[in-house]
Length: 85
Image 1 (cartoon, rainbow, N blue to C red):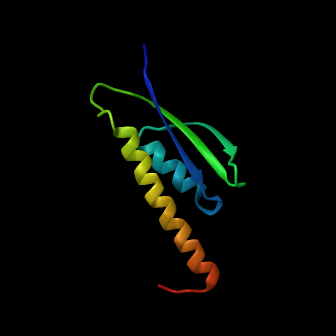
Image 2: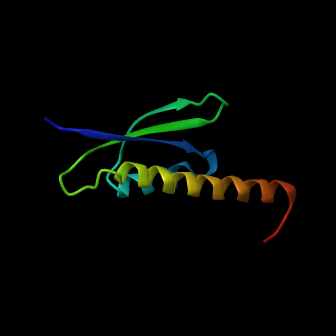
Image 3: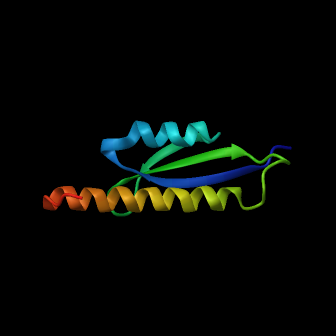
């Protein structure tokens, strides 16, 4: 029987294709996109768990997604304020 691991990540409208391609390259299959509780889009992914993968592979991927998202949000805020870095 196939065992799955799952991942959710916010989708930024201006960078949707890059986000989806990034997760696809890592073996994640897009299952669904829904509106999040605060109005943004949230993507749900899955991929089969293999014997080679570590138990925390999904957690590591989620942590990386959070870091990327936080960086994108900070960049958006700087751009909207006219800040340059």
